[in-house]
Length: 194
Ligand SMILES: [Cu+2]
Image (cartoon, rainbow, N blue to C red; front, top):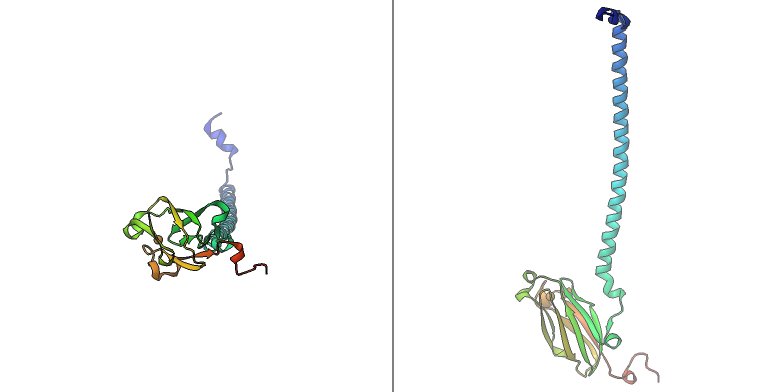
């Protein structure tokens, strides 16, 4: 068989060739259109997924933020009687918990800690100041310190603050509360049995 003979089996007329070319072109256009359609559908799906993922992230961030902001209110105030040691964290948000309860005359230990780095803190420390309660302590950056303290025998609610970061005493969030409860339940004014 010669080359010439092979070519005989191919479309020989110009018209047939043109028709075939047109068909091929049409197929190409159709398949490109289908590909674009599939691409668009895929993009829409991805967008939907992205929106769902973004929504999930927003919810998670809000949940964590809410927990950080309101965790103090949700948790019961720390109570020395329960554990013997009161865990107190200092951070840019102030004291956590924001309120602790102690008994008049009791000697308590505060396990006071921070994860903050020195450059964020004046003199590289957080402080815990309450002149009325005889507290004037400092805590070096990224450390834990056990503070043993005898609570004055004067029940009441006292202000305590950090004066070495985030606006210090002038910043409301740098303040915490120490509630000194009467030593014996017989002295408790609220809810006491007659
Ligand atoms: Cu501080």
